[in-house]
Length: 229
Length: 302
Image 1 (cartoon, rainbow over the protein chains, first blue to last red):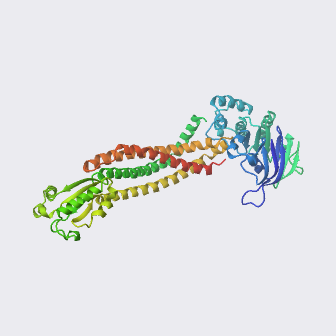
Image 2: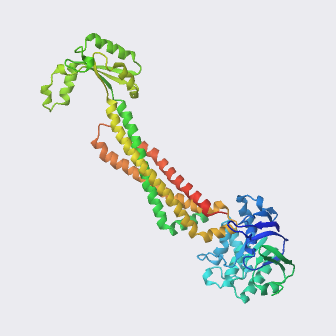
């Protein structure tokens, strides 16, 4: 699903690489936590998976494709198979819940009939049935993140990337979001989630990959957030 | 590709960015109108050249009594010289198309007619006016051939090319055209810069949408098309206004004002306007489309 082969990423005008000779393999159907302090390389890792950045050295394979050999015009095809969720939700404020989710399908040219069929389905999966016509500012943070997850999941991606999805939410709401991500994982989607939330990691008992200064320092199945903490 | 979705995006974009859209429309309209006018002036010069070069002649004035040019030192032209000149002119066919001989009597009659209301008529008598050959050339630009063959020959006072007078006038029109063209080019550059800036603002104000589109895997075409169409639509409106301006220039300035006062010459017809209109529309949409495309490549990268 994802394979990093001694990947180094050095941003321009920086001396220390954000990721240094990192190697990692994530199998189909896994649920992986990416932990580590700020600046440890988590975001760079996720950006490399999305081909928003190219590695300075090494190879990144995602969904069976060597991203260094993927031509620019094929990137959209790759991203259609990857759902993404962010800390700041990234919803369109002037569109309703339904429209926000439908937008993801409209812009990849899906027919209206299909959109009208699958959007209500996915809104039900994330538990937002009955709130289709609300605007994002009429929703709680947790509900907004559910909209974002619905949008990421509506195209039934093989891989879901979540960059600190609970970073802006209170613990109670976070649990709900984690249950949702877990459910999506059980539906067959591989989930990679970066987080600072120790409690969540400790509760879920899933694979934990810890980054520090651009190196993979720990890779544990059924791990916890940290040893010392 | 869902046309309705793209169309609504374009409409939204144009409305949201209304001031910039208007600015683009106006600059496109003004610059293309000037561009169109400069093309129209050129068409006018061509029309006038066609019209006048058909009528201009080379005049070969023969020596009359009292001519003081060196070639007339032998006094008035002799019949033998005149016949020789005529024969030489005939030998220049087909460059020489028509040869018409004007005698002193005819010259005097024309002179009287031209200056009928002037007292100068009484002070000039027939023998002071030169007889001449009026020569029409198949190609008026080949005047030099005739001039070099005849000027300075004994019995010939002067070789005159009417085209030279016209050329001064055409140069004036050409100068006007060049000025219009320069202003048009400067305005077109301004238009391109404005389109670049408009696209930058539009891309920035919609970075949320485009960011999401990139993430969910919308193709570049899908992301950029609404922006490109916006640029093309506003440039298209501007170009149509410019065509309207051109129609006004032809219909009012030329047909209503200039043509009645200058009836001796021909003016451009509607076919010239018809030929220029598509050029304006293509230049307008093309320039703005290319400017938008290059800007978006920078600001809406995958």
